[in-house]
Image (tube, rainbow, N blue to C red; front, side, top):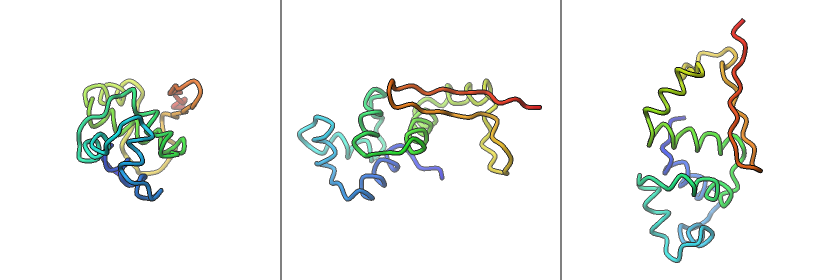
Length: 118
């Protein structure tokens, strides 16, 4: 699934039957324009992603996908460097992934654990 960050947020918000106003207010904004801009492709502040994910009750996997999508979309050079450094493959041909991503919600961290290639 190759959704943009904004589309992921929009789909999850609609799945929860939340309005853009409701989500914006939960993030501390009085109008829906912040959420609507993100959903239309504007780059959200990185420090707001955990708060957005919490407001949308995202699972760990959904959070990991949101962060991955954000980095891939808005920081493509860093994304490419991480793929090379950690042996991340975009190939969905099966088999074990080369990298395991573990997301902890408190404290907010992402751990990347390299698997043995033997």
